[in-house]
Image (cartoon, rainbow, N blue to C red; front, side, top):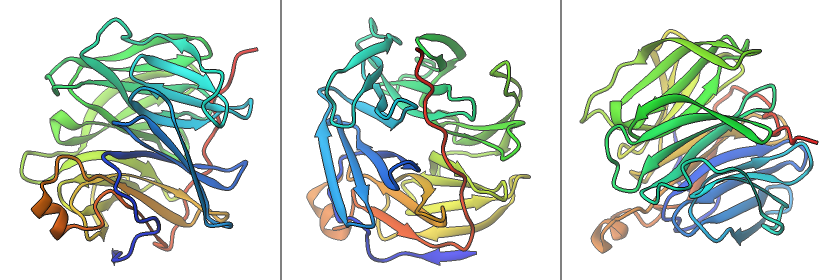
Length: 293
């Protein structure tokens, strides 16, 4: 399964487009531009794109059970409405560390948010992965470099995870009820020069789709870690992906124009755009963040 996408769904110039997630309740795509703290919502049926500025760097935003958004921002995890009003800090994760910010995040099937951090200077060992349950949080993985993409197998017995500093895609045994990880191992070993894995998503067949920053590719791996397909894009900085659309059969892909020179932007005029394709498989419906009463 090898595809090539030449034209964008949304021609934008996102600095660091990230965190795509399909909101099943509204049939819309959420994604963010990290550096300006901008949260976007796109309704494909109406070809309508809206955004609002959160006021600080944003790594991810996702729907909640109360109809608003949960936002992984620089100073921690917030709840807000769909327009960024009424911001409420629910988890002050590393808020006293001005050298770090929240990065990628995803919600498990019980409605808990798993959100990671990273240092602005990419310092090795400065980051961590946290589990946020309502208004409490716990550090799950310490000593990371860039906590990035994560998702679960369809039966919720495995969690796939990327610390981009290792260049590998790891897999854990996952206890859904306890929210605990065990037996970390490399599913897809990596090394510098092969591309840096960034965001990921898992389809309904249990295959893992990984955006490789710097390569212009999203790669599809079997549950055993075998490369079985790819999507090639006309831009190098591919950041993340998710499945969506009313049938969950569209793969949405975010990209970045991060630190590209004028000459590089001339060569990649679509850098920072959002792309989409129909790879012939479906994703899985996302779960909203469970808001505590």
